[in-house]
Image (cartoon, rainbow, N blue to C red; front, side, top):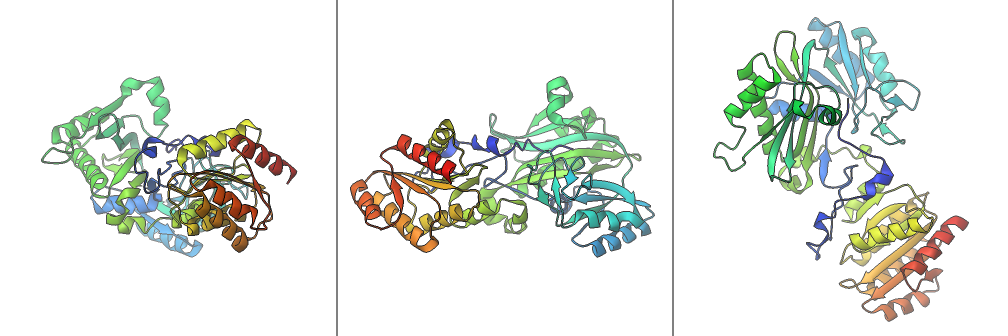
Length: 438
């Protein structure tokens, strides 16, 4: 069961440079990656279900569990409801769970089992690493499972609300064929995909009732009036919680015609953190790259990659160019790190710590064009960072711009082993050579 296209790390570089030229004063850009580094908060399935429930969206009965004991209790409760089977679902922030494999060799992140077997199944999941098509080879830790009622669904649909840039409106994308990959369907049968736009300035400020009923009709829902209300409740959720996306797949109808949001993925706009404190407090950093979590604390734009040359650059465009030149010379960047236009010495020190802590990094390349940022400030930042952190790998620095001579002098007289480069080309050459020797 797919979720959005999370490509692997080397594809994470093509970021959204939309914000690159605005807001020069603060950080020039917030990279968005398919891994979701900064822009959108992702929450677990069980957290999303709780949020939707609050707005009247019908979600299957389920209990989130962090231990095998809790799973046993939950499955016994389900038995009281007269069910002899339950669904045990690994909670990770990546799609493709059902077809995933645990590093232990146990297959499948979602299992339908007899109540008595729920505990044993959960024990094979909890505390283990699940690798899916979308998690990357390193996988994600399963720290919770969702024990859900086994529902008898007669039909599965697809329903999503997302922000459409072109029309600058929320857009509903729905299809009577759900449970599978919507991208494949869009390619093979585009006519099966229904789109509706929502006018946010409409005084009712929601999905128009006639649109909701029309959707219910086209999706073939049994109780059209109820389905229309469910669609409206989903939009209410989307609007009130500052979602960038709600994707329900499948939106499913039971054999007796009741509609459920059987599984959903919710993303929230990071700019709304100040007014969605409850939701943002649920952020699960165990699912994220530890280096990225650390960098965010110091307002550094950091994205981990899988090479061995650590880069520290000011400005997104220069950072991209630096990475390209490294790759062009046969090297491979370990990260994208933009320290922004006016980084403080403390930020430079922290950036350095992150690069130096990474065992994969065999050489560090600092490429700073001092405009707003003065070269002497950067140079003393680097020198102090090296003194604080210590340095056991080659460090190549290229400085250009305001106070550059003073900057170079500070590094020359530091008594530290810092290799100065005369230009970017020279710097990349030196860094790539150093990374190979190391």
